[in-house]
Image 1 (spheres, rainbow, N blue to C red):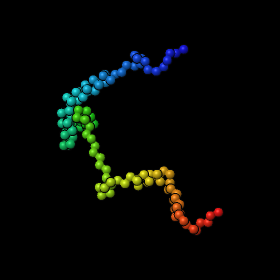
Image 2 (cartoon, rainbow, N blue to C red):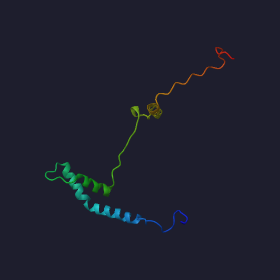
Image 3 (tube, rainbow, N blue to C red):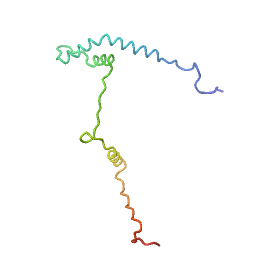
Length: 118
């Protein structure tokens, strides 16, 4: 019969958090040495490099690894720079999925004598 289950100390694959952390730091340091050359190659490409072109993607990777990827600014606005009417967007999405809702019957005003009581 097997023992109780669950997590036990010292069992399983050892964690490599420190190993991966030092590997990433080493890779960033290595790329830092090539960053000026990569930037120079990208400038040559922008100016119309003649001959065998360098690998643009590799140059961009090196620069992104050292400096970090640039953030993309996203700006959302409604009509004329105003707020986005989310209620209309939700209603349209619900109508697209479930179809148009059935109109609700209008409530009768209290004291309406047109209705007969049984």
